[in-house]
Length: 307
Image 1 (cartoon, one colour):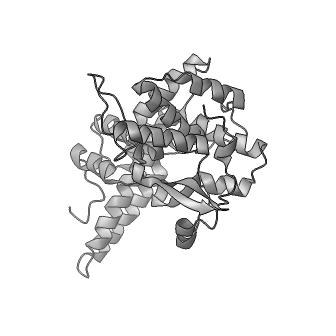
Image 2 (cartoon, helix red, strand yellow):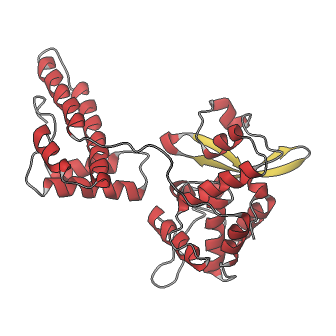
């Protein structure tokens, strides 16, 4: 790429940058690529700040936000390439290109909302009813485990989709063994999430059914055969399906994560502990491996009525 040019406008190159970006959920990656594709379909130059600003002004708030976020990924990767190719002969051209990249980020104005936004939380009784919507057949067992990872362990849907049986670990505490999940979250940050005996038993039973290797969460093929994995979108639709059965048709995976936190708080678990379990707080490498930041004797999962 010419160092005097900030961005390539070839759609395959731009979309490849989104595909190569780490730590993006599948659904987020899809929305970023859609936002960029729609802009490029107008024939405008992705490196034209004025054209971007004009186009973005007519977008809904969410559309502007996705385009701006997608552009940030592309410009950051482009900037990294430019800096890596800098030498004494082209440094001025590289610097000029970097300035243009900075200008692109300011071209799209987004509005940050303030105040309190209504979210969905389930009561303990509603969580119990949610689990009871899962049958005893293979699909019901699969659904119960996935819902358990969301509501009983507070995992993000991408974390639940990525979790493997090798990530289910036994650790000694107070003279007994506690099952914990080794979770890799946003920013490739590891954390340990202790789970209740009920959820641990369900994971053990599920491992016995499907072999105990590979991904825990699985999709079903069109032939109703169990696949090797499931996408975040698949988990989203699974939650919606069971939410509708308890009168919550708009229930989303993140609502179960909020429910996990709320039930823990109501039960007296400290906010600091909940923050650590959710992966909101940074922890050191030693804490990740030795679990020093997490109290294994009691966990939020103990108070979630996993059926």
